[in-house]
Length: 121
Length: 108
Image 1: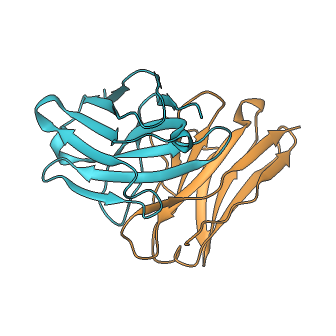
Image 2 (image 1 turned 90 degrees about the vertical axis):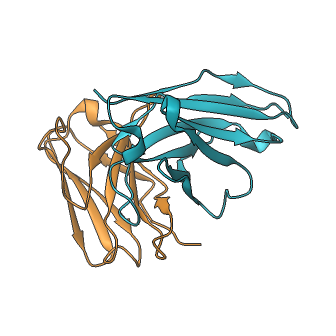
Image 3 (image 1 turned 135 degrees about the vertical axis):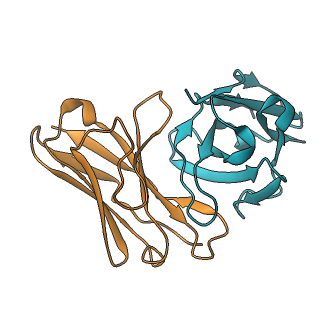
């Protein structure tokens, strides 16, 4: 059974750094793209970026590139989303999800439960 | 910026058919996919590659594409179908993905 289990909710201050995780199981981690989706409070889904665990090829949405970093640790089948300096505007639910196909046929077939990141202004 | 355009809301009576559209210039060149999200829950994949249904998704949910518009059709709508629905495709460049703004389906 494919499962993506994300780390718990975080409350941080502006300027803090943060790394949230997504632990994959039930499939061959290195053989599927894995990505992140942002959902700001009361808003829709936004594509953040995806990574190929095999060689860490990363594709970011231009609107978010530079604000976050995506990485993986293949040895523990875990993907990460990282910020070096959080802003209040980073407050959102972040989902990780698996992609069964690569570019440009992107879609997500399995999703994590979400990690709520709160950065009070 | 490249956009997938969805109606903000659709309302339907129980048992009727709901159609949710998603328009974008590059849809003839890239697949359209659909997700359902209920309050407080992660999205789930409803339709992929324009019209394919993952296992476990009821046949009431179907997808189609005509020109630059993808359509999600929900037949025999039930109260439990009340949710937000998002289309998703690739940016016209193919270099990353994009989501539509979402459609709130209300079952009257």
